[in-house]
Length: 88
Ligand SMILES: [Zn+2]
Image (cartoon, rainbow, N blue to C red):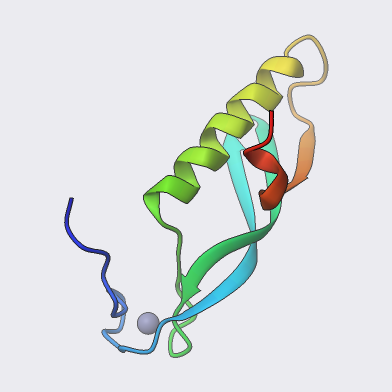
């Protein structure tokens, strides 16, 4: 794997900052809003970059939520805190 980029691919500034954001993930018509997701944000252009492990965790958690909701309204929105996603 290539090393993580420390500069912004969008505007090339080298001052990305670590922040916690709200991330909205969609899986078909089902949405998961995750609070306090760690990411790197560019203070110049506002782009936010999540790492692959973070995205994979959100995706697998969302798949589990959606499967649980399968017999209910499939267009509903779930909310979760990122810190809770990895817990059984
Ligand atoms: Zn930027």
